[in-house]
Image (tube, rainbow, N blue to C red; front, side, top):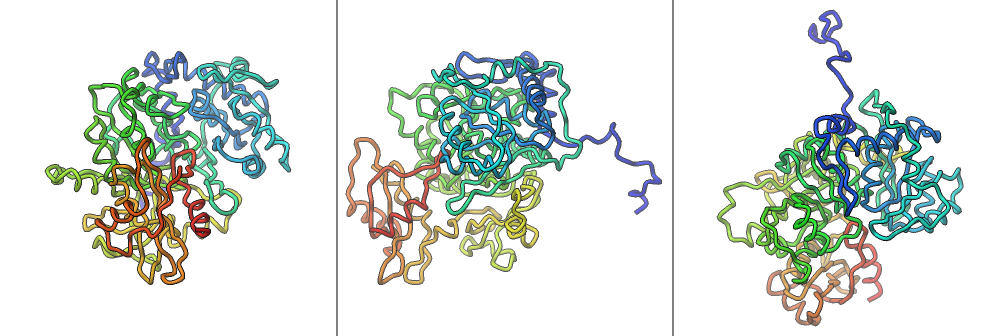
Length: 541
């Protein structure tokens, strides 16, 4: 106890303690990497010195129009420089950043504006009509609008709103950033893409984001000056915190407004992109790109993939094309990824199909997490036998503060001293976690549990299948049976009997789909397949 007492003189002071915040990364980079390219978007190219000045002007301009520490500043922007700048500019004035999904409906945006009490919103010209309509539906005070035209994409200023560049010009380049006094202060407010009821507001703190940036550097085996392509939407877990991380390494953020195979290949070939993150659908785009969109490159591209377990068949193909894929896992409530599939060199000589299956696991905890494991319904550790199933839970610095204005949901999420993911998984003897399913996606057929992920994995080996999703279809005899929704590759053909027979060759008969529907799959803006829509449709078949 003596070492902890004030009598020793070993106290916190300005010299030996600073609240952790990702803001520190950019303040340092403005000097250490002043002339290094920081943000790239077509002809828009800014060094770290220029980036820092623009961020400072944004923070100052927000303060001048009345934004105070703790106020919420929202954005409705694609992955363009203004969104990257807001990641630092909003917290640099003490504000809380609320990045809003650009694909949400009017009613949900109005709810988020009201619930988060946004004081200001930065809006891309393309999305101004829906934002204006949402503001008309609000119950509370409307946020001030700053319009962000995008000349690079031909989205020009067409509204009578304050222009973003004019707004920046009104800011003071010598404005002194308002740094957090406590690292527990709120940094960001992110709304979950709830499939039922209203979305919940997930609150991040400065410490959690800082630790995420540090842990990711280790897990992604990064060195100085990476060229990072921002594919993950910055409204989704703040882009997995990667934009907050880049100044730490003097890296370059290559913005990407519209995700396509051509855009990805061009960025790798022309900008030298070395890293990006994306959902498995992005891997599909790369693998199935037409030859005219593919480009040659001579360096290895490191990819983090998350959002759903990637199909081993896709992993097997993409690894031969110059990409090294690492499966990660997380949720909005955990700032993005908190587990990684760490590779063991003992697996190097395995057949490619086995290596791909291992790479599809969600893996083990990131270094900034205290614990990520799988527990039973009593919150006890399950057997690590690669068969027993339980729920993934986690604790550590990169877990949210809680749900904004929702103490009941926060308390439920943190029961037993862990954050509860509601994702079902098993654990291998080496501790690696492998998702079995979301609890609501398990198909119970005749008393047998069927993992939709397992059936989807089998389907993705079929040469004609581009994407697929498997959900439960009500059945008079079995209660539920698997129903497959399949999106075929361009020009490919397959029929229901062929698909069912293909799965039966690989899985037990009761796991094979009893119905196959061929259609384009509904997806979120991050590329996740919206299974709740498919479940509703399956009930009508």
